[in-house]
Length: 297
Image (cartoon, rainbow, N blue to C red; front, side, top):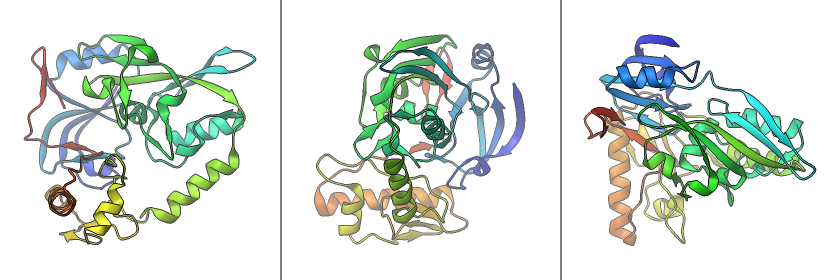
């Protein structure tokens, strides 16, 4: 493993917000999971930092990264499909590129979403009617005891933007995908172009801040509430896509939280709809899940 001490976590967040972590550990071998979890009391497994809002100040937290886990292995080939194991640290864009090179289909609609494979599996990420679990057969996880297990899709519960993995604070190590042939290049390019056109990618952000309520869109509710460009400090509701909160330069954690709470309050007052955050909010003062005297955020 590689261990970095006193790391400024805003450099590892797409929002460019975050305080000083006690340490940032890059796991390089599966055997290291149990060692790390048995010797640290407060840990947080960080993906690409594309959907995690990190608190400011001194963080008495050991951040763990699986960025060095990027292998792709074809485990089985048949006439109808291939089973492909993908490790959690691989960027989704790299997986989409691999799919194109090998003529695999199934995930073109989520092309261009920033994030790691592990992060998307953890929350069942998706877009345009596609979820990453659509192509998953099995997930390799590490539980809170440091034990590594492989769970079939049928053994896991998952739904819109959440999974049993996320709720139990397990860590995704790899996922086994079932891919059929027939990559749709036009579809993948269209989705990438739509994201570049509709999303405020010229500013630091964490993607969609809120889950879409049933039957409507969070962005539409926020827009109809007149909250486009609502700002606290350097945190602002994006004009281009109001379900994004952007960092105009030097936003603080408290600025972003103030925007989030104000948006939730106004939308509820106007439409009687409670918005739920889709991003992960890591507060140094919030209660942690305690498991065997350990704390997992």
